[in-house]
Length: 383
Image (cartoon, rainbow, N blue to C red):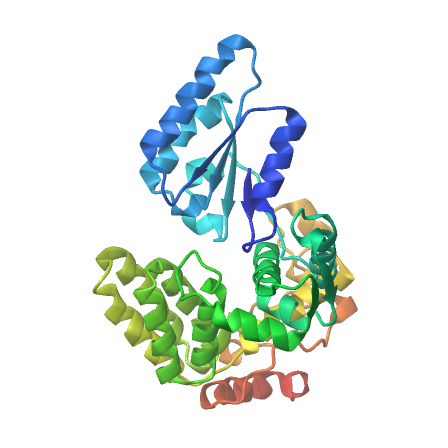
């Protein structure tokens, strides 16, 4: 199985719990500093234990998305034969980073970041049960800064709490928002791809593009490059931004971002930084629209609320005579058979017909789309 989720949600802890519950040996490897040799050693050890009636071990691989294809290939045989039970942890979409042969043999579980209530409960547990913290009289007078700096990451939250508490020599400690911010700023580490600022930097990068500020965008790009960030990770975020933030205000942006992703994969660093910079500046200086992003959010919300509404009979497929006889495809108007390749008919289920989903953005490109829809549909798209 593969646990996919942001840092600090408990991926490693959950893997430990599973191994303990099943009473199985637990081996762990980090994809950052382990190679094919390390994987094979664990597999050979697991095979040798089979003769002594020991349960097959759990092999936990942290940051499995950083494993190369050859490293992932070395796992296939052992996983297939059940020599090991593989649990991988990743902060990246496994569809992009895990080879299809391995992915097809795994169940992917998406772990969501901790809620405010979860994090506050963790703080309470820490100050009342931790061997060192419970010796001190800690009073959390304000918790907002602790939660904000954690970003939903439980590990980061506990690390921040420890840094703050260790900054005091006295027994009684009152923690306020100002105290937390002052102490953490003094202890802030530089960006690195495995560090706590990883998601803060990529957030600043994307928000600079969204805000049409090429100076800010290229600066945060440089921070990631200098910190050793995977260029493919950056290129994927540019692809997302091209669709989410630029959209149909400049459809070419998606083409450019996709070409950037392909070029980065072919060329590699250090030259790929130039392509990333060019694409970043192009997106930052493009007209912006999130209309497509909003449209799919609205549509998914409708689906979740209304369930599986039946497809109207006239736009159903009718490959058999029986289907035609019971009305499938009846009265369907073939658009290309009409003037202008268009004829008015309903495409939504009856229960939600007339629902507004796509609202073109306020930019010159989508103004043309808005006029096109008004001209064809009259009142239906008159908004």
